[in-house]
Image (cartoon, rainbow, N blue to C red):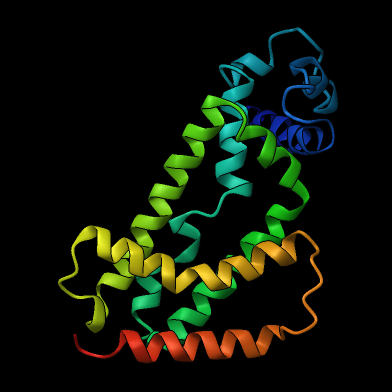
Length: 196
């Protein structure tokens, strides 16, 4: 019980420090202090091999969207492509809102090789899950991997562009979120449900 509690305290203390100060500027001693641990006494290293491992775990659990949180198996039970698209769009929207406070940290992580490698793994997993979902639709059946990847990027690209602009607080007065979501989901579901 104490081990889990201390590990969680470290993670809870580290995320705001990383977000406020940046990954590079946040020391392990600062994380230990914020977690209520004695700095440099070794408690941190009983739970994490280093700051990078802590950051990757936090990114996976609390920042990066993962196939698990999108519940692709549950989506298939809908049996309705439009409803599935709306559910996926809403999950991406939740992920964008969760990520917003950490945009600086995400950008900083992309400057490091380990950050880029982590992002590649996360993106590959998410794209793979989206491709599996899209590949099961009548219009996508039989597509080779490059064409299926291209189709998947086309399906989600517009919605993700919109979310990225909202995440950056870009004023988009001509775009109504609900209209965009409705039109996007209706258009793509009608295309995906057509037999090729």
